[in-house]
Image 1 (cartoon, rainbow, N blue to C red):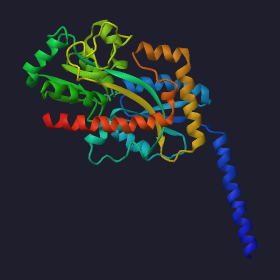
Image 2: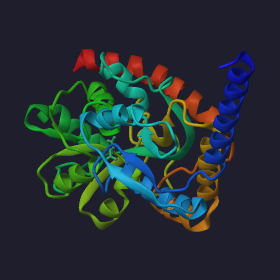
Image 3: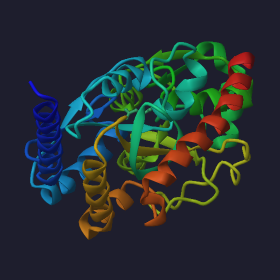
Image 4: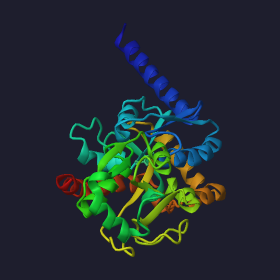
Length: 327
Ligand code: MLT
């Protein structure tokens, strides 16, 4: 082939690649999108993903299909998401555990939360509540602390796997109390909550999204919320500071990520769909009833999520190292 023909064919090939990439970006999405939830169905990550994902499906014109992949405190699913095709058709809801705390707990973590994912948007802030089974012999946080300190070797604590929010925040609680109860892992706090209601486990630290009906219905006890202010969904529940444990500062968050290298056009459409969902009155009502904190417009940018991940890794790493050394 002559040099002119070779150059012409290379240019034609490049032009075709650019046109088809553009067409792909323009008609994104043209089929259902999988949203991986790294915990069992019915728990907080699942519930938030379904509420927001359902509205996004309508905006995008294609279904967001939830796929629950459980194991290792959400790190199994996060590894799978990292290794999925970066074409905008596989996403993950990560949280304070999978995309921050796990860094300190898994020395061989197979992904880097900051560099292996494209941040899309924060979905919800989720204050963490200290809970027990309903017949636990304590009526408030002071009595809970006294009883746990005196009986830790007979108690067990539920969590959703090493590195999950429920694990890490109870690690903080246990280290503040100087106790080391038996830890019972579940595939999510959905099933862990069933065990708490059933009285098979003694206590748990869980995201508020999973606890409001149970506390209001008296099937479990709530002692304190780990945020600076009380939560409007549970106005009678004191803050940990009010109840005498100010160092229990525990607010988690859930956020949407895509594998690194997902096209910007897809990321922009996904971010716009999240923003629209979080402005929708029905979505907001549902999230607020469950005690979530809805991110402000400014907090819904990919840049905000990227800096949240960075700040949370920096915040939780020393807390976990200290708590692990005393537990
Ligand atoms: C956690 O503890 O990380 C969560 O509550 C997990 C879940 O969504 O079940």
